[in-house]
Image (cartoon, rainbow over all chains, first blue to last red; front, side, top):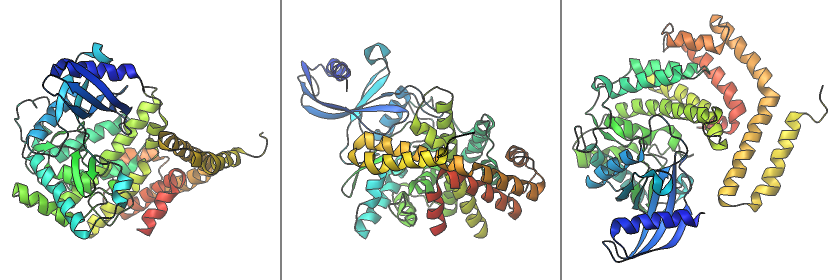
Length: 342
Length: 116
């Protein structure tokens, strides 16, 4: 790991805080983040506004992004809005938009304790009470986030859904993505037709995280310590976040625990109701679970394209492209189940 | 003409060496990368061995359902909304095409879902 990069970040933080000295205690690249590079930085500041030792994360652009992904300044603004709305998220501290500093735009935020490893999280033994409390907490966190509605100060860069109908707006977007991909995907075309035909009346348009799932939050023991990875946030239907969290793709082998392999949907929706006062129709969540499978397939196809085009040669991105039939099988099974339940 | 052992055999053996002799000695990011390489080799070995049979099976299913010459033609017909979403024959065809891909890409996922 480049000491030069750590010193660059330390000098930047010293400048922002007015510290006389900024000593790097530890610095390492964090795992995960195909689109962004995340670094763990422990720093001891002397003097200035933040004189003490701090556990931080520095998040900066990797070589390329995907079309839906926010820029770092946009992500910083979303994180700030979520943090101020009471969501358990890292506190955004300082943004650097001058690429001359490190070669990329980056920002610094607080570092939460615990792990985000999905396999570790779903395998951890929790009491039924702790599991229920955690799952309710997911609903509470999303309800706090969804209290942010357009227009919101500092978030005017986020596009509003076409015709105020987030589901049909997504269908239209994914059809455009699919048209750009040479390889045929009849299952995805079929699923998009189903999503168009079965779209429920939209809920209110709210700020959605759009990637809140097991793997993108930190837990320390039984406690949720941070919701991470805000790069896909946008205005959408509340059920987009609820459906994404419940999608079969994010249960990591614990298929009977519908909420991210961690808990039950009734607890999730009860937690959501506690904070928002809104009763969510579980059928709408199921609809958005289907949307989630299509969206994950679209992201996987785009990641494979980034590899194949030479934009970012990567075995991880290449293998993600080979995962698409998994989402296609889940789509076939889930849509059949939903149709049978009609 | 090729020498033997063939590509499938070489890939299977390379994967076995990687998983049995090398990966256990690794940790962290290197172990993750080795497992990704093993996965890529596994897919390649199954594709080298089974692709022809899968393609034949899928083409037969496409012709049987609606005389489609290719998966591309089927995808275009669905996108043009010329087939009903609830058509059971169409759903069975889509399942056949998907299972063929999964048998190459991730047979373990197939077993997991069939057991679910």
